[in-house]
Length: 116
Image 1 (cartoon, rainbow, N blue to C red):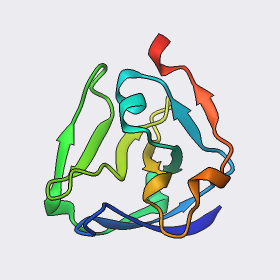
Image 2: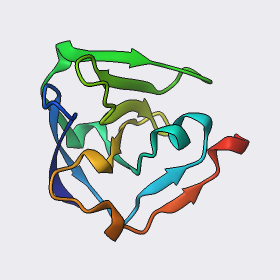
Image 3: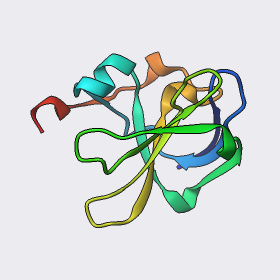
Image 4: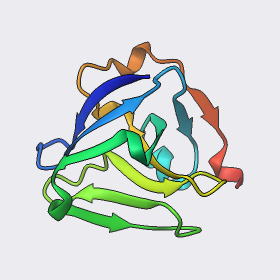
């Protein structure tokens, strides 16, 4: 696990997160495929929103369990809030929104969200 800083495109929403980028995924569900995100998951306790709570707009779909959060200014979803199967609060981080991370250097696991 390492410490990262992330943000939306315009910088109105920013955060710090401790994450393990050796365990990233890409998903082919109707939502993730269109966004092209690379995801990693961290416990909510390892995530700190440093600015922009008031700039977030929420979207939920399918099971309504994941709180997809977008910057109302630039439209970027840099993270989402949800829970692990055991109920532990978690944050899904769009690795493409982390400073200093080169997405092409990551080896992501392919997740078949389309079939779920």
